[in-house]
Image 1 (tube, helix red, strand yellow):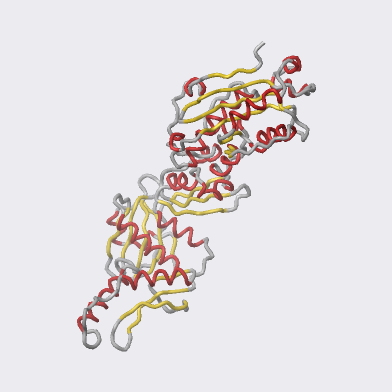
Image 2 (tube, one colour):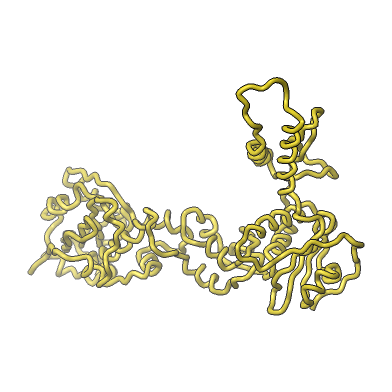
Length: 460
């Protein structure tokens, strides 16, 4: 009876017909993928089977597998799980008969297994019993998967193979699990090297993403208790949700915690931003405004925000305000002269003040009075946002024509604001973004000032 064997085998045969990935060729290392079957999980466990797959230069160099006689009967549970019998083990070689052959294959290679603490730990224990040491570089597919795929509900071999759609044959036999671990290793190495060709999502997130519409609105990511983890006002809620829940380490916190996605279609991402602002408790503490010195020259400055005193840019903290001020000052650097006699001329001051005014306009609405009209929440509906005297008055929905909206926008407002700073700032930012978008579903029109109409008729 042949108790162990060494095989020369191609990746194609080993992987069940799949073509080999190109990612390993980047590394030019030799890897030995190992799986061990043991008498149990207790501290006194012993080997009963080992499989070693040597993988180098994008191909399998050798496959080695053998049963090992543990010199004691194995529990009935282990025999049932692995289908290995005590009779087979009684005639199998002892570990000390195989120790040199195993070491020869491992030395100089990177040791790969699913849970190296278990597999390599048991091998080291056996070599220690023989008075030898075993030092190897390691690649644990379990630990790497936890790093590269945060938020997966289970990281055992079955769950990860299901995630990557890897078929496992001969489960709970060393060679079957080693083949599956090899394929898992190849997928994880691509993720680690940032060369993975697909976009991955966790299984429970995939189900949620299928229900998200590709429409503008407010997207809320929630944990298992229904608490909001993050809210995003978006032009396309499906696209935003996919970006936030894409499997990558940067999304770790959301991947680990998100259990539900809640959407509110608003027609306009700006109205979604208003909804988000109204639920926020953020306090703007610092402001940048413009000031004219005694020489008639304008400049930007940072100051603490005071109620009733308007500014151009508002910030939560001083560091953000300072960074913005430096950016503005870099755009206002004066011309350099080889030699000059005296201070700036009137023409220089005028040109400088014109630059300050141009930068200041970027922080305001494009016009003091305008109405923004776009697609609504449903077919045939339109949304509108009204700005009067540089403040957002409100928003609404209607099935009226655009000309009717432009003529009397106040009558279609469903939600009104009374000089809400955060709402105004959201409107300013949004119009700057909208101006640079190539594809627009919304447009604004400048309005004459005229008397503010107060009658209100809710839209259908």
